[in-house]
Image 1 (spheres, rainbow, N blue to C red):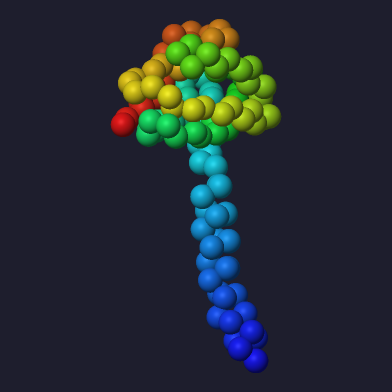
Image 2 (cartoon, rainbow, N blue to C red):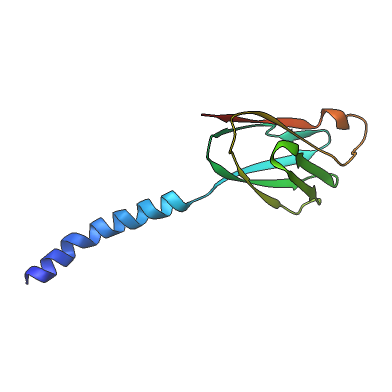
Amino acid sequence: MQAKRRLLLAAPLSLVAFGALRAATRERVIQIEARKFRFAPNVIEMKLGETVVLELTALDFPHGFSVPDFKIREDLIMGKPVRVTLKADKIGKFGFLCDNFCGSGHEEMAGTIIVKA
């Protein structure tokens, strides 16, 4: 009888622990749209040591995505999401840009990753 009671008392606690474990393992996904001549959003804020997944989708043209300081480079094909994992291992402001010429205004297609302590 006491074993049943302990089991009934322990069940809710194990559900809470399982929920906390699932929440801790969920990845942070930031969706970014690429279109002539901008990324949206074009500012991404992260904490030092944080890992995020950038999910990039080109809406109107095959764009490029480059973050030279993190050695990231991807081709973005229209309508096909591309997932990029980014680990913030240094503090500062880091630029990202489209490196596939997309017309007049291409030079403005850029953004910033801000990593804070």
